Image (tube, rainbow, N blue to C red):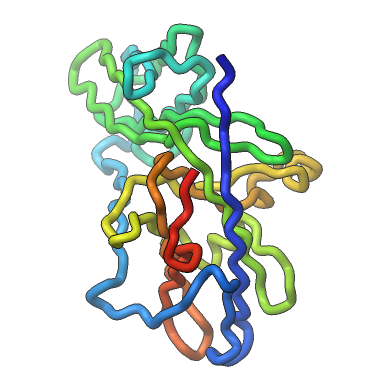
Length: 250
């Protein structure tokens, strides 16, 4: 059965080139100065610095990607990275949700699994990506199974003072990765900040720099997004995107 994927587009207009008084958002968002005690934090994965060279032996890394009910997810992407953040391999799972890598052995790998699909003019997340650390030690093979949660996709349409849309590279130059999802009580919820290709992105050869900033969030939960933004000659503010208090839910 084909799974229906939905997304929400959030309009975010930011006039950041002028004085702070000229900073504006759509009617669905409001802005407040960010107190230090409420500045959001994000746990970042730090690659081990112990491995600077690959060993001559190899290790088999394998496992299954499923949904939370244990059903296999075919064609899920599985990305494998080394200790320095360099991608070693990218695979799609088979009909049983199975993946397997054979790579030079080192003490630490990072694996990211998720699922995306095309829906109309946009890509959407079917399942929220998940990152895992794999530490083989001296083992010749390591099994790592990953269960994914169904996803809704929130697209961020941000514009600068000239009216130009800030796509993936330009948006992250302004914001970095400082976008955080919460529920309506401001309790953190798991999400994945990335980007999704739309019709314009595809027309430019699927250039990832020109994708639309996006967040993969759980379905059936009203969500708020908080964007930490630095306004010239003013400082950092938190933009609360909450759909006039109702949140965004798919």
